[in-house]
Image (cartoon, rainbow, N blue to C red):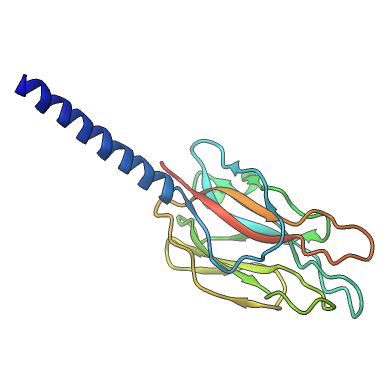
Length: 201
């Protein structure tokens, strides 16, 4: 009888440890930053194809529109997923979550040969007074696994704050927070925040 109780206790202990490990794994499965814009809702996740990971990225950016015209700045982010070699750039698979309707896609930015994206920092503009033009996120920068820092071709408004935690095995997915189109004579901000899924390869 005592042996049965001891076995049951051991099973419960192992199940508890397994649950804690699962929670820790889920907690570490994605990375984000604390200074994302306050507007919008989280869209869907998009993941790199199996066996690939992000070695570069592109941004969708609306350039400065001039005085009195609504600006949205950063509208979208694409991860460029490859098997790791620079020769894969021509066959890179682009993944993006929801993107805003304004702007154009910029040139790709790549990590040095043999390295990959591991963490990021987001540039955002703080909310302003009600009669001013808010923009949410304006640019992003990534750190590569070899220490190289890559900055996107975004806009200069706002500030970068702290870096996200690193994904030791690289980035394999993206989810964006977008403000839906608000209509004529309303202030649009487009992309406000982003988070990335860590590779588990």
